[in-house]
Image (cartoon, rainbow, N blue to C red; front, side, top):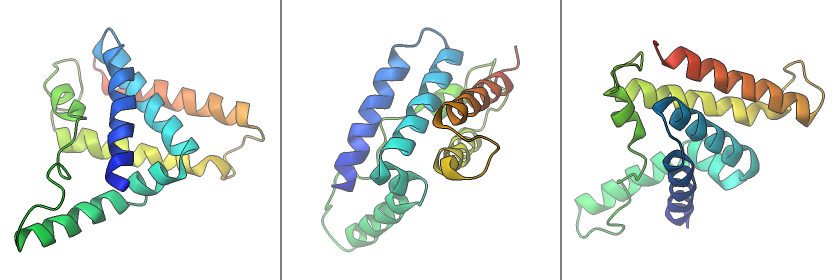
Length: 143
């Protein structure tokens, strides 16, 4: 079930990123979609932010080392964006692991929606989130 949920998330993100015209728009769509998914879907939030997907993948790896694959595509991701973006000259960082880690760290912000960040409504929290995404996108690009 967790792997199926991940696959659905990857499909939604892929649709958003594919619809973008530029790398800058791709990053914005990627972050906006992930923030929305983490905020609205507790299972996705648990999978990504709480690290349960990684723990599940580690367990699958341990079992598979002893025999047959139990989930042939458990370790594959259809979200290769960090690797591709790291190769773009206008992106500030050329390390895909750093870019990926940056995005994962940002997702904790989506989970902190009920934290006291100086906003008292969902609309204000969305404005803060939008500004954060814009700031990250602007900072990620050197041009």
